[in-house]
Image (cartoon, rainbow, N blue to C red; front, side, top):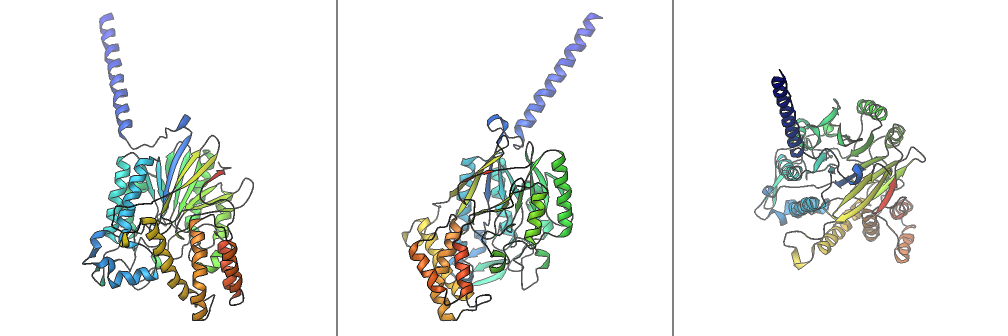
Length: 448
């Protein structure tokens, strides 16, 4: 009897030991869902947005300098031919940075090309394979886009875009398949980022309103989606979980009057929705869309909401964010990083930063010369052309963040007041940097 008992005990011990070893192997092989920062307290987050990637296979026979793509870039200043090497440089930087998660705030592709989506997903998988979790939301360019095109020489031709279902399938590994809950009315979802932390990915894009000859730039969180968010935030509060938001459009104005001067870039009904989210316990939301490095704040005391917008990867300042979240201190440390070189031949032998700055500057002059003749400015063409450099300088300053106007630039702005009072107000609001700082800053949190 004693021998049989000993044998059974040995078999039981061996079985349990094998189970433990197997579990250790499984957990060590899986994607890093458990954060291993100092004292298990820190979550390292990278934020990228507005990649506007066009797969190189969609550019043929000198299309990089052909008429169709040149016309496009003249109206929308993005360095499309360099999108691939820029994005690959970012992927390598992220591998070196080794964040726990990468948040992607939409406009992943130039205009929703299915081929581009598939290529980006392949590169995101490299991060996942390196145990870096990727979490995405769509932007206004990404789904049902009637302007998905391939370029051949001087001409552009239609190419396949993606439906909402295809977007979710292509990016299944990057948030959707690991979702705790999904909104049945949009591509919004919530997922784990680490112990005590959820990411709420909000889909506020209006791609359902796109038509064969037009797309919608603006964003809106529908009442149904807000109701779903309310339920998730209630669960989070009950479980003492911190929820970080992720959305394409700005949730808060990043300069006074932005929703009037550029209404398509702040989500519809932003004031009510921002106040609702902060009342429900959200402290931080990461956004993109306006291609600017800017942090905006709404509220005070225990119900603050910070909108941390990150600049685009397709033109100056070509940047990404690294955010260190300390749960113990309830603090975010935000740092801005830049892509300063890429593996590509730059025209004129210029370095990448100089070329990027020159490209953006030159294209903005033409864009503002036209925009200032349109509502709400309605400035005469000659005056608009003369004022364009002042608007270009103000917009670049806002895009770079931590804007500060010089005495010389202020004199130019003041001179414009007689030409267009509303134009003067627009310039001054672009130059007025609202608190807090934009590029490198520590933010105290109050939630959960």
